[in-house]
Amino acid sequence: MSRVAIVGAGAVGATTAHDLAAAGVDVTLFEREPIDWDGTATPSRTPADAASARAAGVVYDAYAEDIDAALGARSLERFRAFDDTRGFRFHDCPYAICVREGDTERAEATRRAAERMRSHGRPVETVAPDTFGDWFPTLVADDLAVTAVADNAGWADTADYVAAMVGEARAAGVTVRDETPVTLSDATTLTVADESRSFDAVVVAAGAHTARLCEAAGVDLAAVPYRVQALTTCVDTGGPNVAATERTDAATTGRTAPAASEPHPGPMWYDATAGTYARPHPEGLLVGDGTVPKPADPAEWRREADDWFQTDALAVARERLHGSVQSTTDAWAGVCTATPDGDPLLGRVTEGLYVATGWQGHGFMRSPAHAELLATRVAADINDDPDPPATLDGVLAAFDPTRFPADVTVEVREGMLVEERDPQT
Ligand SMILES: Cc1cc2nc3c(=O)[nH]c(=O)nc-3n(C[C@H](O)[C@H](O)[C@H](O)COP(=O)(O)OP(=O)(O)OC[C@H]3O[C@@H](n4cnc5c(N)ncnc54)[C@H](O)[C@@H]3O)c2cc1C
Image (cartoon, rainbow, N blue to C red; front, side):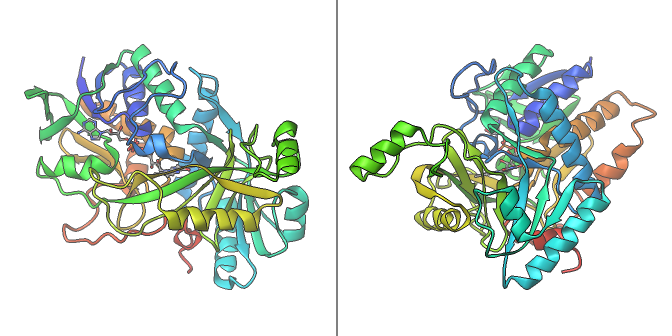
C-alpha cells in the first residue's frame, strides 16, 4: 500500500486525508495542534489557530467563474450529505449580495456577475429592492440599488466540520498524529520529532504556513498570509429570536438585552458597498470581513479583533438590519492566504509533493470539492493510474501552484469583492 503524509488538519487536509484513505491509500495526517478527533467535545476541540477553526462558515456556489461554480456546487452536495455526522450540522440559508444606491459601478458588476452565475446553472436571482424587502423583512432594503439572491447556500460551524471529518478520516483508516509539528526536508521527506520519515507523496495543506514549510524544501509558492476578522452579536428583532424574559428584563431595567436565544431569522447577506457580510449564528448573528490588506506573519499575528473592525462591522449591521443590534459577544481574527490572481494553489509542485492553499477567504466553502480533486490526483499519481478521470487535469490546470513567475508580487485584497468575479470591470 502506498504511503502518503498530509500536513495540516484544517478543513482541506482532514478532507483530503479522509478521501485518500477511502480510496485505499495508507495515510498519516500530521497536525501540530491538539484535536478532538471523535468530534465529541463541546465546543469542538480543533486546531485553534487554524483558519478552519476561525472561519465564518458561509457556504455558497454563487461564483461567476465556471470552475468555481461547479466546485462550490459539489461542495454543497458533500456538506449536505455530511449533515448530522458526528455532531456536524449544515444549515440551508439563502445568501444575498446587496449593493447600495449610488454605488453604480458595483451595481452593474453585480448584475453581470449574477448573469454569469446563472449561465453556469447556479440558482441566483437579481431582485428589485422592494421585492427583496418583502422576501426578507428583517433586512433594511430601501437604500439598495441591486440585490442578487443565491438559493444554493448555507452555513455551518467550521470547527465542528473539522472535528467530524478528522473522526471520519480516522474511521476510514487514517493515522492521526496531532500535537506533532513537522518540517519538510525534501519533496517526500518529513522531519517528525527529530526523525526523518519518507513517503510516496506529501501533501502540504498547512494553511498560512504552507509557503514557509515548502520554502525549507526549496519550493517557492506565491502565497501571502493576511489577517481577516469576525465577531458575534445578538439582535433584538422584537421577534422570537430574543427570549421573551430577556426582552422584558431590558424593557424594565433599561439594560441592553443579553444574548439572543436563537439565530437571527434572516438570510446571509453581503453588503458589497460596505464590504461586510453576516450570517445567522446560534448567539444571533456573525458579522465579518475585517480584512487587513497587508502580509501577516503566520506564526506571530494578533488573534484578537481590532477595535476599528468591531466598530465598523456593528455600524454596518445596524444600518442593514431592522431591530436593535447589540454589542459584541465575541470577536477574533484568523489568517487567510492570498495569491496573485485570487485563485488557489492546488496540486503537484514537484514529483511527490502537493500543496493546497491560497483560498483568499473562500477555503472552507470549497474544501470538500478541492480536497476531493486533490485526493483523486494524488491517488492516480501514486497508483500510476493510466486512465485518471478526464476532468482532473483540466480543473487542476487552473489552480496549478507553479503557474506564476518566481518574481511575482502578491497584492492582498478583500476576498469577497464583487469586481474580482467580473472580468468586465
Ligand atoms: C475570520 C475568518 C472568516 C472566514 N470565513 C470564511 C467563510 O465564511 N467561508 C469560507 O469558505 N472561508 C472562510 N474563511 C477562510 C477559511 O477559513 C480558510 O480558507 C480555510 O479554512 C482554509 O483551510 P485549510 O485547511 O487550507 O487551512 P487551515 O484551516 O489553516 O489548516 C491548516 C492546518 O495546518 C496546521 N499546520 C501548520 N503548520 C504545520 C506543521 N508544521 N506541522 C503540522 N501541522 C501544521 C495548522 O495547525 C492548521 O491546523 C475565513 C477565514 C477567517 C480567518
